[in-house]
Length: 138
Image (cartoon, rainbow, N blue to C red):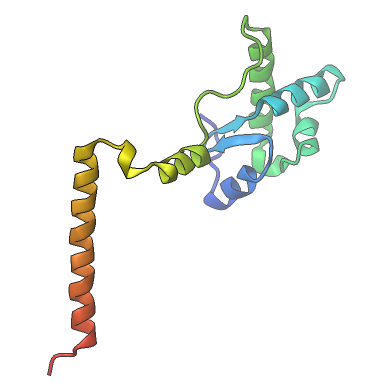
């Protein structure tokens, strides 16, 4: 676990970097392109604290230990039998987009019915609320 946790503002800034797949308060998931870039720079003798700013990261926000640790992990991954690889799973934004695209027809009937029932109850509550605020009691 990282020593420094990112604030929501910092996560929003980091998320804008094209080399970032996902970010949480304690972890950044880097793209395969960044891993390759970082290792190429390291082979040329560039230090981790210089590589991250070259890729658009704020070194003060990232912190020296996080940058060094990430480069070390990239080197270990590159030496593994599988070599460098894309991050596993989908990013948070991809999961949200997939959820938004989900169609009621693709869901199980019972789940779809339950969701529709909840929506009806909610809409009925909204209607009752609107009735109360439109006709003030005397």
